[in-house]
Structure formats: C-alpha cells, structure tokens
Image (cartoon, rainbow, N blue to C red; front, side, top):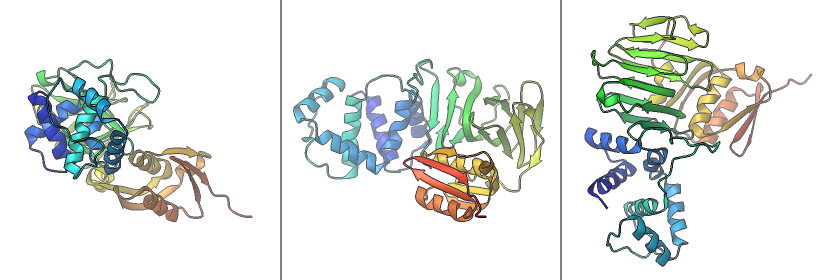
Length: 349
C-alpha cells in the first residue's frame, strides 16, 4: 500500500467517525472523491451502520483462503497479519478498516454506471472532478475547491469541475441545488453553468436551484453580488435575498424573498415550505428520501402545503405522516415499496 493510499484510508476513517477534518485533509479527500462516482460514494457508505454490518456479513460467507488470495492480489503483495474474516470484528473502527481493505480488493477499477446502463463518468478526463450528493441522502455535502471556494450540495445534485479549474478557468457545471461561498478573484472570475443559464460571481455567497428535472432555475443572493444570464439577456443581483428565476423563456422578474430559509433551509438541515405547491414540496422530499412519485392527475400537483418546518433527518414515515395530516381530506397517499402514489381525494356526494 502506498503512502497516499494509507492517507486516504485514514481520512475515510476520520470521516466515518464524524471526526473533524482540517481544510487540507478535506481538500485531499474531496480530490480523491472526485475521481469517480464510486470514490465519491464510498466515505458516506462507511457512515451507514447497516451497510457496514451487511458488508461484514458478506465477508463472513467467503472462505478465508479465497478472501486472502483476492486481497493479496489487489494490495500488491503487502505482507500483513489479517485476523480470520469469519471472526466477528470487535469495534466499529476495526470493522471499517477491514471493509476498506475488502472494498479495495473487490471493487474493480471501472467507470460507475447510471441506472440506464450508460457509463456515467467514462467520458470525463482524469483530472476533471465530479461531485454528487445522491437521492436518498438527507445531509448536504460540503466541498472545498482548490481555490478555497466552498460549496454545499443538496440531495440529488451534481457539480462538474473542469480540468482547467486550477489554472484559472473557474466555470463549473451544476445539475441540482447548491450554496456557493466564492473566493473573489477578478482576474479569474467564478461562474456556474446550469441547463438554463450562466451565473457569474461578483464577490458572492449565493444559492442556485437548477435541477434539470424541474421547470425553472432559482438564483438567490445571500451576500455580495451576482450576475445571471440566459445567453441573450442578463440581470445583476445586488441586494441580499434578491431572487430571479430562469426558464426556457428566459429571465423572470427580480423579487425579494422574505427570509434566507426560503432558499437555504436545506443547507441548515431543514425542510421549509410556505404555501408551496405539492409537486415542488414532494420533489424535495423524494430527493432526500430516495422515493419515486406517481401522480394520478395533474390537479393534485397544485394543492398547497401551507406551513411545513421539519428536520431533514426525521424518518421518512414521520415526515410523510406530517404531510398527510396537512392534506387530510384533500389528498390521498398510497405507498408501495419506494413508490408513492398521490391523488386528489374525491368528495362524497
């Protein structure tokens, strides 16, 4: 095992134990995670007690001789004493250490694949970085770029950082929602490209909600200033909590939202809805909990969810119960596996 591999294993262990990482350690781990989708997902898996337990169970089923042979082949003939794998591992840290070795032995060096079977990162240059926070993860993902700029990534979101970023080309791509705290550099301006437009930093903290699956992007200014362009027109946001929408028709009207919670409650670990249509609210919930939504009709999508403030770490069943309480007598929810069927409740005549 090389010194770099040992360092990465050490950082994954710290991350799994929820121990604080220095800015340098965070940058090293983020760079490693950006090399592939598999790398990106691995540290979060070690925080999942169920995944750790299942991984150890799978190891227990493999004959020790066969397991030793596979590990030996992948760890470059490193000589080490390994406790027999069928013995129950004592202590979470020891268990994670064994799984780190096992993952290195069993996960092949191949591109990650999307659900449709197409290669997800095969066309990405080796030095380009891809960061994602998958559906089903209630926690935001914190990323520190090489220039010191910080990004918090919401569920179901992905950013792509170009190979030339360190050389001064500070344009990244976003599909999803993220909060940016940008290090100002007039010589090399920072910009974010979504499916509908380009957002340019002018010395800024800002939030972008730009999921390709939704009808519009929302850009909210939190500090400083930001410029939003759709390729034909542009608008500058200079006042805190100003927000503008981007649709296929272009840039919408500039408004001021009541509070920053209306834009970045997710980054603070909360669901926060105020007279939000059910489709928008349920989209955010489904990303956090990894659920599929099927609507019986379009009318139910516009039913409002009047007031909703719930921690994102709350179990799915409890969160759904609170939604059902608000929509009692108006909307019917039927859950089958990971799919939620939603329809407007008919009134008895």
